[in-house]
Length: 393
Image (tube, rainbow, N blue to C red):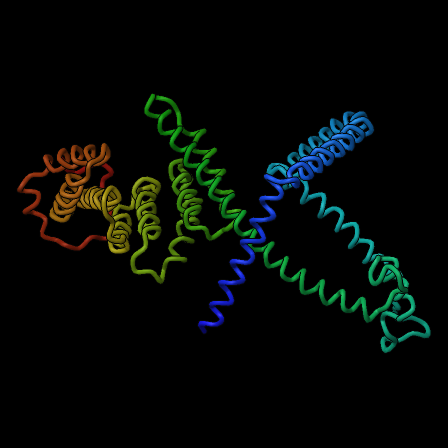
């Protein structure tokens, strides 16, 4: 080990000595002049070569360089325009048009070579014969470009095409589904925007009917894409109720109830029942407050546990149920519903909740102890004959 280390040290010392001698010869001895002359000569040769290249290439370069820049810029602009998102639909349409022409040509070729049954030909005869099919495949551009059309090779190409096209169709369906979801959302937002504009117009003393009709068209477009879309059904029925189209609205509401029949708690179901109660109270002639009361009780059962500002729906249901029970002279139950609504409204910080508190307080003030005490019948008839005016003073 010591001998090997000694040899390494000796070899290192020898190399240092050699480099030292060479360095002294180059930088302080005769070698310095030799090295300087060589460097200067190399610089001169490189300079001559650069001058010669500049003289021969400078002219054409000045002409070609701007042309290359222009072509590159034009190509970049073409790519930006051709592949812009707003043109994707047009590019897709062009592609589908080309493929449709190709497929139409393929079908036409197959029709021409089809062996149909006739005199001398029965159904046992092959439908397609090898020789004409071989020629048709060649004309359609299948197979090798350099060899005659070969059906085994075409089979291989077709197998690959079937696999590739199957995957592309799957991706296309997924993409179509996503696009339809985006389209439905766009219609939903547009309809909501029109509805909000109508509300503002009505608050100013105008007419919101045209806005409601326009909003309904967008909600109906959602149902054209998906007839079972619960949001589309709810908003379309809401608009139809506001437009006084009660029978059409009820068709949508029944569909919602059908799709939510197996759900114990469902906000769309609760709202559908609430809209049906509204139709029974204000759309039927004479009003059917018993049916409205039944629908509102069912809506309260179906209503999920809501929190925050959404809790106001439970208050509104209780208030609406109280209104129906007042018509039915079920004062004790109506009073209880109003107290529940008042308690919920008071805990919500919103303009609608404050307005709800004022309404409920006004309704509670109309009750008398005598009316509440006289109400000893808990039964509520489904279709009673009642006055359309409120029995409260």
